[in-house]
Figure (tube, rainbow, N blue to C red):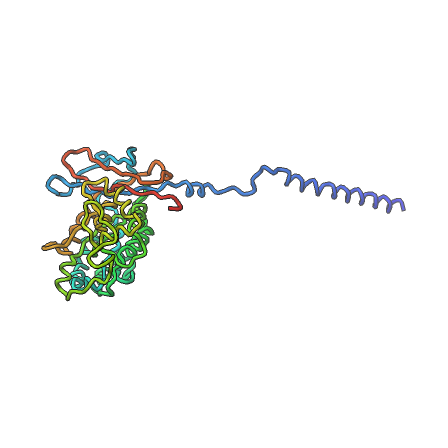
Length: 378
């Protein structure tokens, strides 16, 4: 009886000790509320604070118009809104190209289609080069990706050779924004790794018919995406001579009149009326882009696109063929400098003016004039 009573006492003592120790152990784990349960990996912070690069192709020619290939990074000076920038990426014609070939396929330029089709080999060999990739986009009443990005020059050439004319409209601006979106997905040069230069080559009339997109929005996005636009203007006069004339069914007021007065220094035309109907977007774009260069451009969409992004516009009149224009563009693309810098602050909304100069005299420099940094609600 004494032994069993002693056993019970011992059991109760041990069981009580267990009940006391269990909560104490739990309390030890939860008594440090300031200790973080999960740490954020360090690489996530790097992604959030990464600074984008501003890339600007630079074309340098001598007094005779010949390309200059002997300059070094120390010969260039770049300013962003007047603040000198440090060049973080420098290359001379070596970074491979990502090119969108944007071509009008409306019925209005149907007579010129055989000439455009013949440019396939010039584009594939001269513009793309050995390391380039290209996509082909046609536009008329619709915008169609005829060939996605490919490094196979034969495939790209065949796509251009097989172009056909469509309906009468020409959604130029809708096609341009699609080209910019396609290029924005291609890798571009960074401070640590080479990438691809983003280029859009447009073969088209300067007139847009039927687009929902505004030219100002296209060019702002192109500037933010580091896209350089080269344009080849089709001669609508040449096309008209090859087909029966047709009436322009669009009306801007009573016959022979215009509902709005012309912009100062311009002749009233349907094209200039389109500009006024853009709610001031294109006019404002011309003020802060073209107002900083010598050649004043008002209503010519292709010239404005080239000027605003650092490219070049070539008109195809008289002996200037589409093939020769593409050959000249290809020669420049593979002979120009590519400079990049990290901007001082990507939070400064508004227009950022870029100025590129070289230390050597009697050289002509062409680069993008700047870029427009819009807020999240712009």
